[in-house]
Image 1 (cartoon, rainbow, N blue to C red):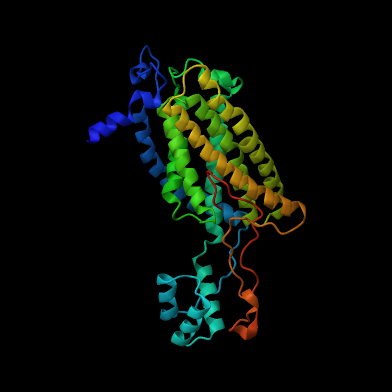
Image 2 (image 1 turned 120 degrees about the horizontal axis):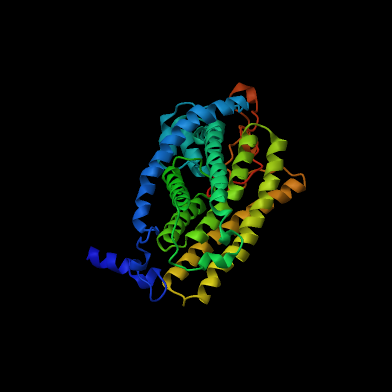
Length: 380
């Protein structure tokens, strides 16, 4: 049964153009071709990335945060209360009014005290500023290095300047070591993002982030074993070109350098729109949709690859909408915050008075986030 499924999955008619077989992509005469088995190395490399990230955040990002004066704001902790804590953990973090009144009778707190307890308890679970800064620092470092390395890999290649060269001789196109490592490292990094997404800072577009990571992993993996490598290197470099700008804007935002953050965000928005909504659909997608049909009849792999590209393009449009909405607020002088942020709540939410400290109201605990996380990669 398993062998039958395996044979059907690797049937040449699915992944290769007509009249070509996997035997045509076997190494010969000193020419090396991409193979699906090459991808096994990405899983241990992903675990290595997680280890490197752990030490990077401790020994590089944390000292850098101190250097940039990233300061944590004091959070008032919810007082211990078994009744409220049990409800919070088992029933929900946002009790309805009827539940608030019931909890008030059970806990001995007033309704306002119960509501305040839940706000403080929710704030306790929200990620700290330092955690956000360290995550942004790690992603900034990788994306910047990946973009520079990616450009070094493709800038001297003919298909960087002439899209038709992407398909010259396809699929019998050999690879070189720089292409191999560029692919393996990029794919490993996205595996590591998927492995850590549950513990990373969560945003309102959490589901979109999961879809993005999964689609990216599938797209990179397929483009490797089906030998869409020339197109794949262009696509990866294109994505990395704006990601490091976003992460650097976040870092300066967390450090309180608002003007620097806003200026970088403007540059990021421009680069994002140009690369994701202009170059990607009108150059790259045109290259992968139109040019192959001039050489071969359409096959399943052709449809599969371009379907995954379509998923990414839809996500890009979604994130571009958020970016433009934030840019509009920025231009009109309104306070701009991350459209996907789960904001901390003030002690005086809904006009309630504090039940401690003689009604003293605290300042809003959240930093303004005038940047959008999109990402590949992109949680802040």
